[in-house]
Image 1 (cartoon, rainbow, N blue to C red):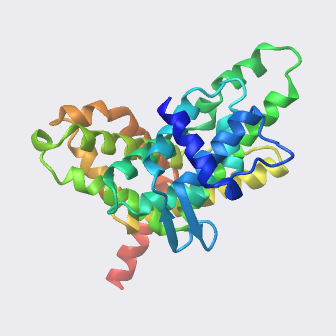
Image 2 (spheres, rainbow, N blue to C red; image 1 turned 120 degrees about the vertical axis):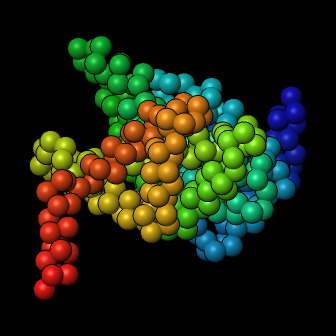
Length: 298
């Protein structure tokens, strides 16, 4: 009831920013679409387009993030209309990333934004698992279901590219996880444990791109997309290394034997390591070492 009254307040205060588009392409119920647009408008306002230098956080941003989580949780897994709408409207790039970068402003607000970002960036194969099951189970797969699944994959690529294109986004993640990691485990509050878990999950989501050693895709658009995935993965890893994010991953891996908390994240940490190593080959690593040794001895 409180969230409904908050939406009504936003509708009264912000009618000029929240009109529902006349031709909806999201698949959402019109009433849900209007409410979701009102929720987005309450997050804040970006100046200068996606990731603009100035972002004015709305007074009801925390409530809006909670409402957005509610929508994402109840999204129909066979359609994922809410997830697709947020991708179509570029909500992550325009609103959520600026809020994450403002991590010194309101820790609770950033924590809520982080939960939404992790949900949106889930691997398409996980997010659309019901869709994939529907396509596999039917002799004549519904092309609309396939199109919705492709849409989720397109938005996932857009999300990973947004992080790769601006080092400030990964820098914000490293800063978010570095602070709780600097605290002794016995003194670390539960919310800090959750932040570490969420950032690790987000990094796994972002690095889930096509590995360079994966089987080649068929020629055409799929091949071009695969090449772009490889480039995005390498740029993400390069930025993570520059921001000391990979050092933190190695540190966490070293603590697994001694820390119960880190053991709980074992699988995610191993998956992170897999993606990091998939970006190169043993031959390339040893070849680089040989070249460096030759230069030093020359």
